[in-house]
Amino acid sequence: MERLPDMKRIAIYPGTFDPITNGHLDLVERSLRIFDELIIAVAPSHKKKPLFTISERLKMIKRSLRHYRRARVEAFEGLLVEFVERRKGIAILRGLRAISDYEYELQMAHMNRRLKTDIETVFMMPSEEYSFLTSSIIKEVASLGGSLRGLVPKNVEIELKKKCSM
Ligand code: COA
Image 1 (cartoon, rainbow, N blue to C red):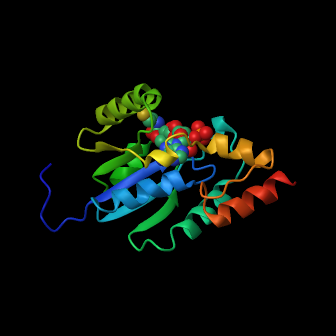
Image 2 (image 1 turned 90 degrees about the horizontal axis):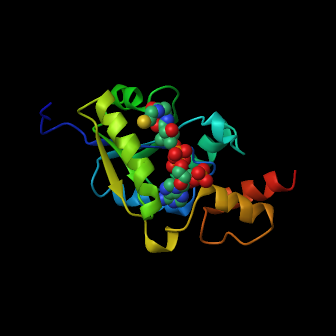
Image 3 (image 1 turned 135 degrees about the vertical axis):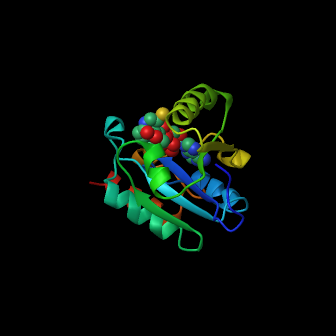
């Protein structure tokens, strides 16, 4: 489908975000240099047994995005490509941190392309300093009382401390 010149370039950044990290925010910032708008799309990901509920994740992300006027957050269920289509997105944004991400990401990108051929997947590399980060490693360090300074937004650090002391 040919895009009209005045169409907004909207990208969708899907994931579990349990919780959002500075690595995710690094990608948000980079992607806004390319796209007009970014929607962080939070999947329930029941299989991963998330620590935070969907509404807790949305709240933390919303607060973390307060300095970005062109980025917002929403929850979605069902097929990602259908959500992208409903929001008139032109691309799915995913981060590639290391070679180990590649195979899984390739599978998802090919499947999403098969489901909707005109939605592109765009991969971006986060800054090197976040290339080892995952939400799981953040939760593990938090549960053992380690410092997360510089790795997650302050509000997320506070929420993690609260959860871990429950
Ligand atoms: N900084 C820090 N961590 C990062 C990161 C970055 N830049 N990029 C990825 N990660 C981490 C995530 O925090 C996550 O860590 P975790 O496994 O410890 O939770 C991990 O890398 C990757 O997981 P995530 O980004 O949450 O993606 P996911 O693989 O859980 O999510 C969906 C996959 C939700 C996008 C996918 O399942 C989906 O599209 N579901 C909808 C249903 C659908 O359409 N299915 C068909 C798809 S082909």
